[in-house]
Image (cartoon, rainbow, N blue to C red; front, side):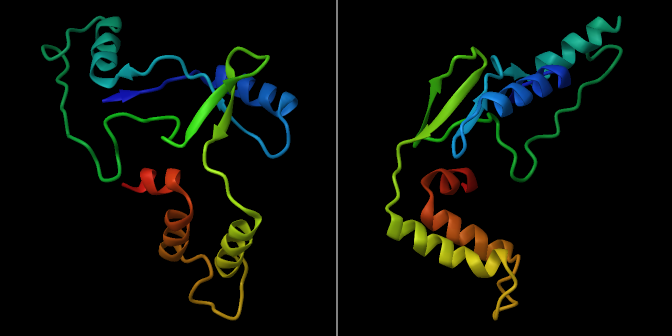
Length: 145
């Protein structure tokens, strides 16, 4: 299982920098470095503390939990990144384009979920929201599978 790790000060610094240089309406991705293997990280941490993995401290592999993935992709197949003037801040771009009519239809479908309306069954209804987003966005649909 591979995961990205970043220190809290590094993450905070990048988020603040992005907030200062970002453009309204744009999405940004922080350069997380290379993903690391969780099992190897556990072994290194055990050795760092002066113990021997499996001998002094057992490592129990419990498998993948529901919704968890072996790898965590940072972009979908419909997205790509562009370099900014800041080396660890990437601008996220989407290959999918939506017409204004499509966006109006999507916003109308989202209205009863986001705002209390004449249909209280849809207000904050997670299943309905998921269905709307899966129908509208390839990247959201990929993330759900």
